[in-house]
Amino acid sequence: MTLRQQSILSAIIEQYAEVASPVGSTLLAKLFNVSSATIRAEMAELERLGFINQPHTSAGRIPTDKGYRFYVNNLNENADHSLPERRAEKALASRVQSAGAPERMIRNAVDTLVELTHNLGLATIGNQLYISGLSNLFGQPEFMAGASGNAGVKNSVQQVAQLLDNLEPWLREAAPNEPLSVYIGQENPIGRTAGCTLIISRFSSPFSDRSYIGTLGPTRQSYREVMNLVSRAGQELEEVLYV
Image (cartoon, rainbow, N blue to C red; front, side, top):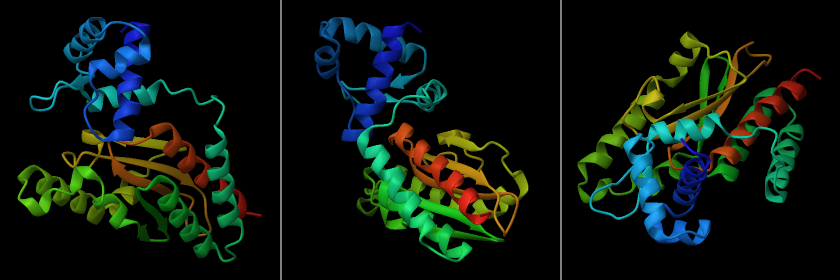
């Protein structure tokens, strides 16, 4: 993949996260200051490589799981955080530190992640899974057409429910060992067709050496911001729980 194709893929992912509709060549042509024909040629190659696809008959493109994985793997972890990101991290730290009891610290961290990421938040507290923000998750455009009889969306919602039902025993059994783990779409161990991304941070707590906190949201999300916040939540909890 060329550098320009990487930049176009990143732009598609970031624009799609923001507007929740396929990204067309006209917008990208303005962004990159090239012709729409040039962008269409690059998009065709990205589609051939499996990083984007064209849903239905729309002229726009959306990322595939493979495209998201490439994007996540190539995020610059050392990039400077924006002012809103720094404010969000400060708010998260403040909510955790002011909580008092360890269980309340973890719950506050999850609730704050829900507010900041607009995803579902979750954490293990002992042998239980604390979940907050279900309305956030099912309020996303990807999951809102179920009432109108859309079979694909109904299946996605059922897959999300299955994932949540089985997440706590899976975490206990699989015990992901990375400080931050990102499971995109079909990479998820359960609910692979749900169109969701699970981002979790491992941390040590009085309840377990392998406690987890994270978010579950649609594959269409702002990965850098959410990954930074989930990672910060894990780090903050580990620090304050062992002061």
